[in-house]
Image 1 (cartoon, rainbow over the protein chains, first blue to last red):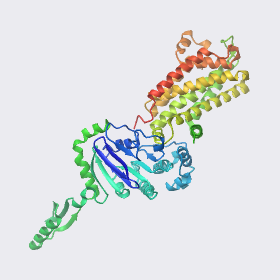
Image 2: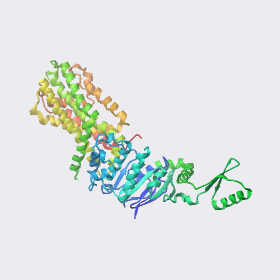
Image 3: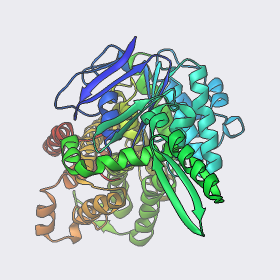
Image 4: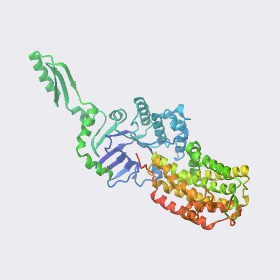
Length: 284
Length: 256
């Protein structure tokens, strides 16, 4: 049951399962939007194979568009239409739309249904944007950086809406450059940097976090000492045995695992080296 | 929904957005009325020496109607489509099952309905305030000129969007093109007061030909009610606009 198998631009190979929230994570300029626009059928690719919902997006027609919903990265809404009108307008484009009032409830804008888009906050506008992608009752939703530029409470609200999509059984293709967003929302994460995939997995085991280097920190005679090790059990044993034997204190002893953020920065930083060639290939 | 039902659906929302947009309402509806009233007050009682002489107020009714029709079609479409394009709204719409032609048809329908309303409004103001007769017997010829002009200027407006790089540039480019042409074509300044060379120059552009055709349809003193040669020039511009629009119109933002 594969949703899409992409082997496009720079050997990007993706498979998205039905009903999952798939996060496509990477820094700005990594090629996320290029990839997602190929999947959405906006951009023509120069090579490779892409199948989304069983069709090639480049040639797919109206029937295919009935089954997908799109939220663009920098979408502005018609400022003169109200929340309800914007949703009704889009509902009319689809053969079997979801009832407008239901969508309004899903995006949590019950109190704002009669308000014009121009009078909504940025976070509320984004939720309406998601609502307009939902109103056609699509099987697959593309969300391109849905919370960029949001304050923490607006992000939290947007996350709730996105988390609710999974409960509806929707497949969600989410692009983001926020680690915590991917971690919070996604079933699976693929990290892209400089136009190629550098890691993939569930948020928990991403980038072999379990096997990453452990950091041991302590103070000795007032000096900060840091030890990086791939074998923390052995290193700690040696360190503490020696300290006990010498009667040393090991003040402020601390053992830390790399956070997801560290993994992400390391992975995306490593790829920076050949970013220029990759970027050129992507924009071709 | 069938194609036509979808066009009607799109049109309903385009109408709402049009009437709620202060810029549309001012420039397309109020501005022509204000200009007509100013010109009528200033030139009331004078005679314009065209077609054997017509009263100035009679001259300005079809003149400002021509301006209104161009404003409701070319100007409104060029401005609102560029704004929607740069907002990403055109691109977003392309991601839905809505056929692109339906979207354009809704906007064109909106423009033509507004143009018709302006015709009625200006005819009523001219008739009630200045006794300018409404030539009911020429309704078919007036509607013919309106349809040819509105359709052609819609095509030109859609084509013009391709030459407008950003939202900020839209009003500047549209006005820089149209305002001088209104002056040179005799819309603001009666043509008997313009040097011959000016009218000849204006004759290279569609505004002058449309005004001419519309004047002939609206003012019985003009003689033949249908000015086929002028309408043909306007239609030729329209076809050229249509071809350019098909070739160069874009749905995705140029900026941002």
